[in-house]
Length: 244
Ligand code: ADP
Ligand code: MG
Image (spheres, rainbow, N blue to C red):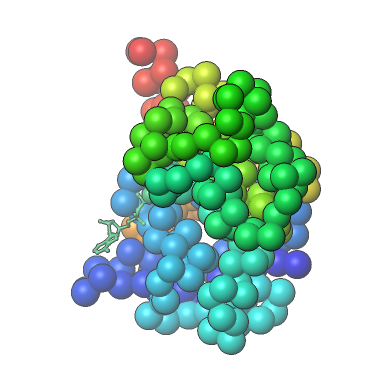
């Protein structure tokens, strides 16, 4: 099981958001995608989810070209938790069943538990049948993200992308979500996109993107030993954290 990105390019007009990118995601690995805002991380995620198609190059999942797979088929294997999870008005159950319409209560509650939402759901009078409000308005940002995680889990995808999944939640939820992601790393292949350098420190491979290209790749120690963008970003972030 692996995903291979080969010479991938995605352009908006003349501007290449992803520019001749090569990247490997091996089975069971935790892969980090880092880089400054606008470097092409979310575009790469969208290409991996096949929300859009590339202008040139290929993506292969287990040797199969993405173009030979239907998007629905592909998304049984790869799921994403975006920066802001979209919920629709209805109950928690309705929102979860979207990922697996046949799931029974036990399966739903397992996903809820794994996503770190068990206590919350149990505290609700109506449990899974509680209304989430207009587009999830009655939930906190952290709770919405966790429902997104539960949904991704229900899809049973082997690959999960987290695209800045904790950037809009409170610090406590952020900590909990990172713990959840840490657990998931034991059983899934994870692609973690984050502006926080420390969150991908333990990744098997970190890809540092710049202007749609892979500028550097390697694990934390390898990248810190190089005089490059990664070390620069880590040092800059540490300085900012000290200043806070
Ligand atoms: P990141 O997630 O690393 O911050 P993105 O992949 O979202 O970066 O964006 C990469 C670049 O592509 C940015 O310069 C962004 O402005 C541009 N871009 C993204 N989506 C579009 C779009 N739909 N139309 C035009 N430009 C876009
Ligand atoms: Mg982004």
